[in-house]
Image 1 (cartoon, rainbow, N blue to C red):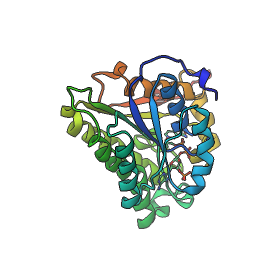
Image 2 (cartoon, rainbow, N blue to C red):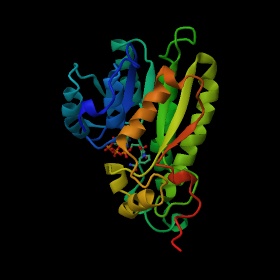
Image 3 (spheres, rainbow, N blue to C red):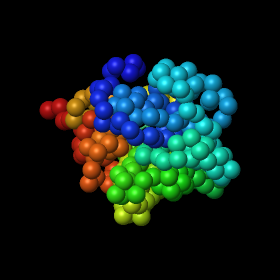
Length: 274
Ligand code: NAP
């Protein structure tokens, strides 16, 4: 998707933020990054390991600025320490954080949640998909300005499988429920510092993470067919919502889980053909 497809402007001018979770050009984090860039934000990107660095660098370079990329494996404290130390050294201050990271084993994203969820699988999904936001939010908040100086904003990515049972989403649904609850608790803690913390509950989108979920194609089709708008969730819609939540447009909005899924979440019964 080209930069020009995202509305340009100055809503994020003068703001610097960390984007976590770009794996390739289809990543939700990449759509959000392009939208924030088109509105003047200065961006740093974290990637899990060297293999990912190779894939992400050309994307980051396509934005035209000097790439600012740092390693951050969210399961590793030293890696997270080094990531935020690099941000502190280069920028000193951070205005926003985008968290678009999740993981669960393929064997756990299929069939029975009750029978297929191991202790280790549960812990890993929770660690990478929920705790990592708590950890990153704490570290980021320590670099954000005071309320008088503008505070900050954070956004994480979640999915309806946290609220409703979605076949095969299993342990990831439980981790997303923890992520959403964490979003509210973090929002309360950081509110007095003027830091707003929200989550976007996006409808199904064709990304690497989605490819790991058994029956993902059916999820996509149902997400469209049952939706109010009768369309797929768009990257522009999700990225635009992130822009709203991370810019001053989103003033007064915190502790919120915003559904961006073409209205799917509010449908009780699909269309009835008589
Ligand atoms: P994606 O492109 O695969 O992004 C997921 C990212 O998480 C990847 O960059 C991945 O890196 C990273 N990650 C996993 N384990 C990590 C670790 N230990 N340390 C650092 N990074 C790690 O897929 P996506 O769909 O855009 O996912 C972004 C977010 O949106 C996720 O939270 C996802 O649950 C959420 N979401 C997705 C959908 C959807 O339908 N696609 C809908 C609602 C919400 P690796 O590639 O190295 O593992």
